[in-house]
Image (cartoon, rainbow, N blue to C red; front, side, top):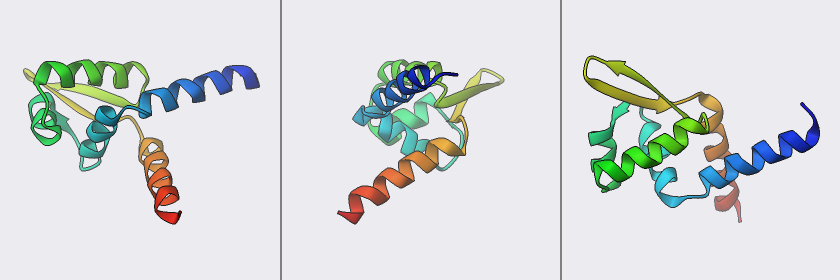
Length: 95
């Protein structure tokens, strides 16, 4: 992958992470798998709005989903997502 492509992908990722609602969802998923209803309760949003945000996060490969019966559970795609968030929070606390 060339540098220009990498820069575009990093830029897209930061755009996805720049939304306050999506950050709240990611922080809720820090504890592990959750369904849409639980995520909605944690972030105090309607289920339809949470589903929309989860689709954006899933399309960006920040979260993943798996079906368990009729329930869809969401989780962080990998530990790198948490690493990025933790580094960012450390950075803002440092200043």
